[in-house]
Length: 178
Image 1: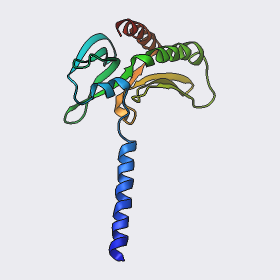
Image 2: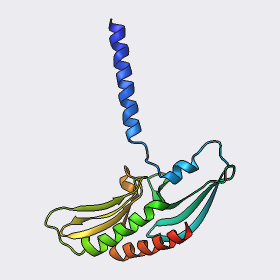
Image 3: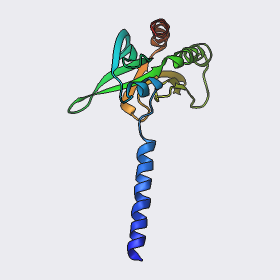
Image 4: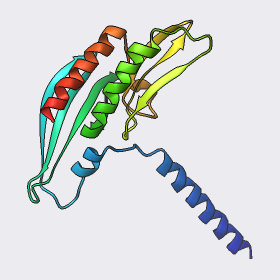
């Protein structure tokens, strides 16, 4: 009986650990899922667009050379120095998410940043991969940011309103190159 109880506890613990690990797995864009497809001869074409602070922005075209199928995405990446090494933080937006991000930037510029909330307020756009662009109030004024990885506090890029406008322009360029 003790063995059955111990075995049951081990199974329940393993299931809980597996569920916790799965919930913290990095979310992926459709382009990332496509590029990780097994049994494919994958070609990646990188088109540099611009930088916002230390964050590089590129269009990436993925082509399965066997089937001829294609997928594109917009990659944001930056290197973050840690005590012993440099980590690369990155996020991918699917081509169908760019328009939503552009609309969000316009709304933030035209309807959010012109207000002065009396309480702490957050406004953000989030993509399939966990990328975020948004703003929050801090001591009565707005702070804008990009966050490349959902569960990583070191993946923030702090931007001002001019850089937010620059991001919108970069997104317009990206749409043309998708």
